[in-house]
Image 1 (cartoon, helix red, strand yellow):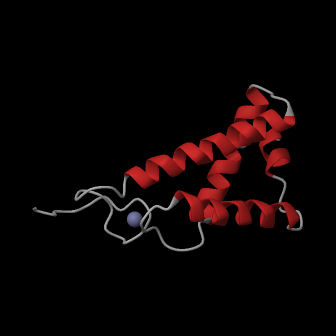
Image 2 (cartoon, helix red, strand yellow):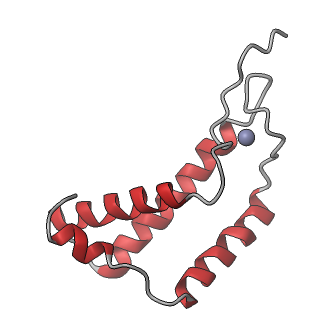
Length: 106
Ligand SMILES: [Zn+2]
């Protein structure tokens, strides 16, 4: 096997605040264009996270996969994802991206 340069989708530097902002901005921009009931919108976001999990897990399969060493384990990874969801629900409010997007400048 010639392992030239395996794709490394997950080895971006720490924290993920750039990704966080990009996702939230895209979410609110889309809702302003095409409003949905609150829980339905969040359910779509949750399904998208699930789909992203499958894709990033797939990117770690086989000899051509990401070489970072992470091995997808849906059962325990789901616990981590649930914990993150719970933590974000209990967190104090953050800068209001919904309002910022509504004011333009998306
Ligand atoms: Zn990886």
